Image 1 (cartoon, each protein chain N blue to C red):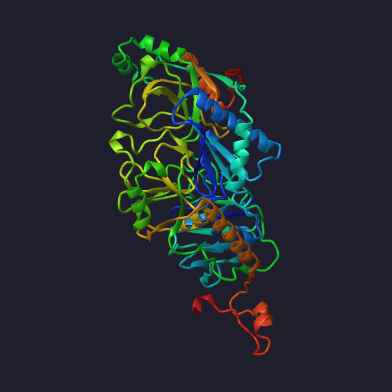
Image 2 (image 1 turned 90 degrees about the horizontal axis):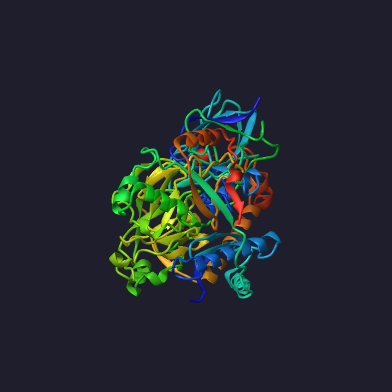
Amino acid sequence: MSAHLKVVRAGLFDTLQDLGRIGFMALGMPTAGAMDRIALRLANALCGNPAGAAGLEIGVMGPDLLVEAESVRIALVGPLSPALIEGPDAPTKPLDSDRTHLLKRGQTLKVGMVEGSSTAYLAVAGGFALPPFMGSLSTYARAGVGGFQGRRLAQGDALPLAREQAPAGEDKKLGQPFDYGSGPISIVWGPQDDHFSARGRRTFIESDYRVSKEADRMGIRFEGPTIEHATRVDKGGADIISDGIGPGAIQVPGAGLPIVLLADRQTVGGYPKIATVASADLPRLGRLLPGQTVRFAAITVEEAEQLRRDQEARFQRALAGFTAARPPGGIDLARLYEENLIDGIVYERDSASR
Amino acid sequence: MSVRYLSCGDTAFTVEFGNEISPEINGKVMALHAEIGRAKAIGRLPGVVETVPTMRSLMVSYDPLATSRSKLEPEIEALIARGLPTGMAMRRVSIPCCYDDPEFAPDLAEVAKRTKKTTEQVIAGHLASPFKVYVLGFMPGLAYVAGLEPSLYLPRRSQPRVRVPRSSVAIAMDMTTIYPFESPGGWHLIGRTPLWMFDQRREQPVFLAPGDSLSFQRIDRKSFDRIARDVESGTFDWAKLVQSA
């Protein structure tokens, strides 16, 4: 009998994503992939999956998933409100984020609302048994490819699991929440910063920009002061001969408002791009919600590369800092040995009492 | 114009060969695209992820955890300085197109009127144009194909259509294109091919590639329906449309 997670109630924007469909931009194929790559990688690492495994990207409100398998180990990463585990013959219980949980046949995982970020991720140990398209399981819904039938999950879908039961081993959790950084979003000028006046460039880095309601996997349209092009827009100031669009490219069409292009961005485009978000700050962009305000601050390419290396080092430390997660009420042996040999026994705090 | 290196953050840069659309400039772009592909294939240029050719520039994307801009840019400069190959082997692709059905070619009469030609002359001009695929983008498999016979140049429609059927063949400015999916579009629809420019069942889902030479081959409605059936069922022999130039 094959193992599934059955969608008994669909969320709003749930798609399977991995780290992207790499190598086909020359054919016009967007990379897609997780909006918050840090969170997806953490979820996979908690489950013992390879970094490139696909997980479920959950936007705004997640699905209710019925376990139709002997057992499955899942990891939830991201701010959920919290998720719940239900039945069939036990009281409903909240599930902490940033850790794994062992679910049994007949239980329903109610992922619920994502709060304080636009995305959260669910990984399953062993991954999903779905065929990759062009080397990737990332869903690219505009072309109807990848993931589960190339689209968002809908009620009644049965997501096939690679394993009939969870691998042996104990649950793990993140030592502490990952530090995504704060302050202004770092950008590197270019590729077409010379298409903007000095005043336009100043406006861009000296103003607050608010995430509009037009924010999705393709990009985020910001609201705020308009950025002046170097040449009048009616004289072609907002047109270039189309060129390649990298992740985090910030294009400014004639109306003068910046659009940051993200995972599902088109591969080429004809609007000038004033700057590009540093790759270390892309996960922060992937977490922004409509109404939130950001500032942009310019750094050099070298500084952006260094930020990314520093972030990766922090990420590797986070992986090394995973600890055993025990069911509420159980004895936390790791903490007992590490910090509390004198006073006695330490109990893992019950998540519901926090 | 000398080569410019434009920053695209810390994961890519764009090598810009010029600021105009010309076969010479695009030839350099495609040659560098191919050259980097060859270097990668034999394990050189570690950290280069992929390259994106457009009409006049090549975006080189890289992994900042595996290499850096200051290491990579001189390597690309050296590739260009060594001299890029010219006259590369390109594919010649022939696309069957039905111009005769008014459902397929709703704008043919208007194009004829605005270019002061008969519809037959418009079709002949499209068939005789030396087309070349410059770039794929906007949606998977959508090719910007330049080389339209100059007497057929028209701006885009002032009122774009909300729905252009899949596989419509359209012209605007100095270009032609084939819609890989049903989508909105502002180009003039003058025919339809039974081919699908994007078919995820195929090992190579995208049919056209940058650098392809392209010509259209006129077919009637009966041939259209026959080819369409074979394309739909996955039995069509795509290889017979392609010749190595």
